[in-house]
Image (tube, rainbow over all chains, first blue to last red; front, side, top):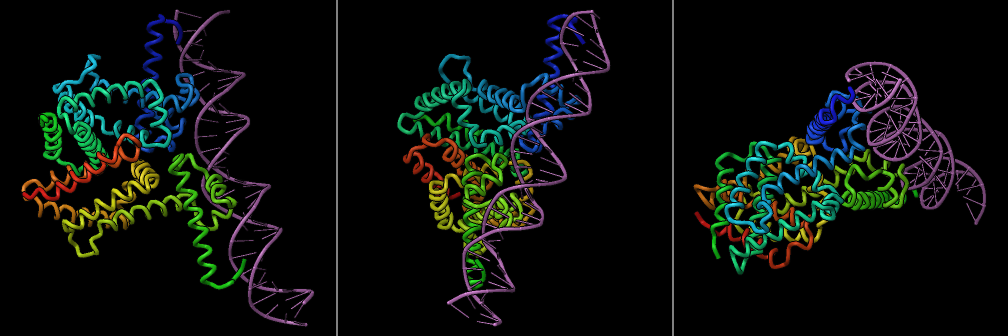
Length: 198
Length: 198
DNA sequence: AAATGATGACTGACCGGTCGGTCAAAGATA
DNA sequence: TATCTTTGACCGACCGGTCAGTCATCATTT
């Protein structure tokens, strides 16, 4: 292949990249990062190992790309269109989206949790540009809970985030243990927290 | 060294084993399992790599030993002295012990979470003898919540476990974000669930 | 007490194998 | 021909694990 047109070329390259990323994600989620070799990724993508290095500088770059993409997808759910404030309806929407995401992309979430928990990863994220976004969102989130409850904002927020994270953990890692009824129950419980004024 | 006495010898061997385990745990928690080599573990324990293999069959055995030990420590907190029933006071004690453990052995908990989340690990645990114990305890726990609340036992339990796991995650991985006030608040909240009859 | 033997802890060089990453050459397209 | 894609052989590094052999210590013999 060669310059058909610059745009077309770029698009083909982009497709190949996606091909590699998709193959890598599948294996990472299945076997973990360290247990997955570039050989396997390439084979799963239907190309040679050498070619993978034409599209990504390193195995690590593949991981980072996937991880950042996921993080941004989650962050955008809460993003509030940059109005520097999180409203009640926005949080409700976030809950809906998040639960849907958890359901539809369970493997992706599993992968994400595995990576996040790895030593050094969290520190690396928080010092990067993504860390800025996370901290900003966190700040808005705190303000939101302060509006909701003057004297116990931090506690309300801790309960909310704990419920969300703990539920996610169990949902992703203990399949079949959580019924649809419980899923809806948890959603309602989270929603209910948003209504508890003062 | 040679047969001073069989007991003494055994004790020395035991000490060496502990030395290796302790060195390994420190590195596993710091850098992760895969990123830690036997060379490093041995060096950290102040012995040669070869000697490590005199005490453990493989790197994996070191990991398993640490992991099982931790699991059993947690399980014993809920163990109820084998009376096949979990009482209210037992759960209260469990909460106390668990929170103390989380505080005192934060690194250990971090390590445990990292391992648990790894692909294949959970399946391996649940099919082993530890899995039996976990499932038994789970069963007793369900019964406990059924006594507590007839019509929403599963939901109460989901909330309880989600709060506990989500809180643990944040406490262990986001140091400094959780104040003592919040810690006590969370404890009280968990305790409160136990009081909500029907 | 001195010499010898026996035991098991301990070392470090070594091995097979794998992995991330490179590169020269071939293929494909204009 | 010129240019980009693609391949797969190849490299050096490292890792988990092994093993022949050393050494300190005690028991036994002289």
